[in-house]
Length: 249
Image 1 (cartoon, rainbow, N blue to C red):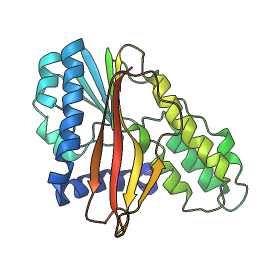
Image 2 (image 1 turned 90 degrees about the horizontal axis):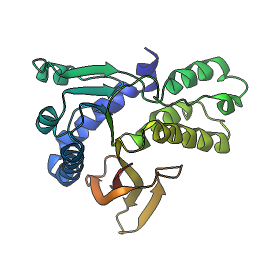
Image 3 (image 1 turned 180 degrees about the vertical axis):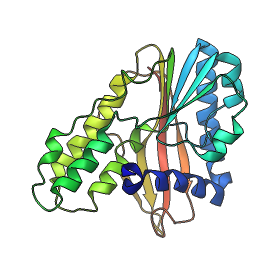
């Protein structure tokens, strides 16, 4: 109930709605993500692999994963009914519904509903543990989720204005840093948006960073542009692209 009120389920459905609106625009990004993941699993042949942020599996080369992995753990805050139905006959697939920040969203919800009419200093005390102890696997794939981990939380906070700007920034940094630190070195793959590029009707560009903590040392780095929204619905009347980076850690 708390996560629904914060907008997590609406956000997940919004991803599918945007994809269905113009799937051709997303084709290149999804292909790049899937190919990077495929190369990663071919190289390492993981026994048990966890996909963090599996969602609608739009960017997951699922068939190939089943060939190279003995068990696939799909981790997300909610698994769409359609995905559960689609994979119902795969014996080596495990669905894990888990808030990947390790409970930070719940803590923020409780804090907001306790102090939204009073003290706004509570953000400093929010813990960001990451997922280190909750998800066990041989290899981990963080799939287009890092920059989203803090987004819904911050959007929820913004419904109740007055939070210190520096504290909000530090919360974002802590959430992202905890996720990166949870990814075991030598056994992980990270794909994430790192920058938002908004283009107005005059062709002028605005660049906004999406990552607020240093990324780890990258092995086999790749990058590309994601034409996220060319119709002007995400940022009203403007085109939105993301710069994406993929790496082994």
